[in-house]
Image 1: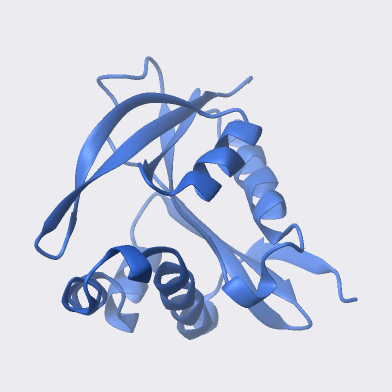
Image 2 (image 1 turned 180 degrees about the vertical axis):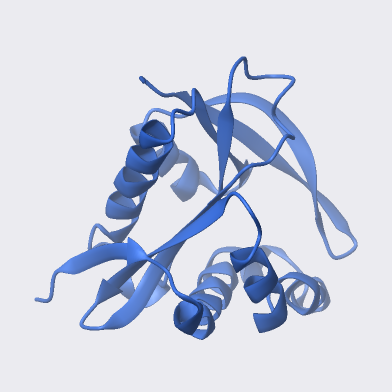
Length: 174
């Protein structure tokens, strides 16, 4: 079995990252949302142009998990001030951590999380935080295993359906 490697993404990785994002999102959320809401979400948020713009965003970084020279997952970290009122000190958001459904169970998610935590500590952040859908129990368990706890919530607009994301945080030791 080929090992999973983690490295910083390049612009050439973006089409594969987009494919992983759509496959993972579809696998996780399609059964709970209308096709119209899924398609509207993709049209607005999951395009190559949007991912390219996010890649070029200052104070953000993408890491990819690769296996046999194929992108099987990714994580995006960015500076976002949404949680500032809840967290004392500096914080970085773990905006997305996705693994292609065909490649789950190979520790790619754990390796991406480890790299994210290493990056956040190396860059002297006090906190790392994220949003996770209140009904995504698998992801919630993953984040709890990695030391994240709930501190708030916000509305995540999924097409015409306002959904609740829990906000989770983890204190970093610097």
